[in-house]
Length: 87
Image (tube, rainbow, N blue to C red; front, top):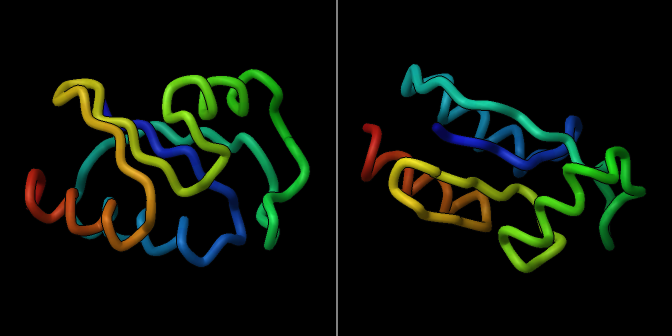
């Protein structure tokens, strides 16, 4: 299962969502915080805690691929990962 930690209104998150849609891949979205230059306000304490505990950073977008046990930050890196494994 793919899980995307992201924020609505974040252009980098939109790039990843667009690639997932283009590839027809199912995924779950988590919205831990609002977009913002230095990190927006925390929107959901539980998903924010998961983001930082699983990935180790407070950064979005963040993709968690549970089947492959992979975690990827940075929109360009995530898009490349998706193309490699799901394209």
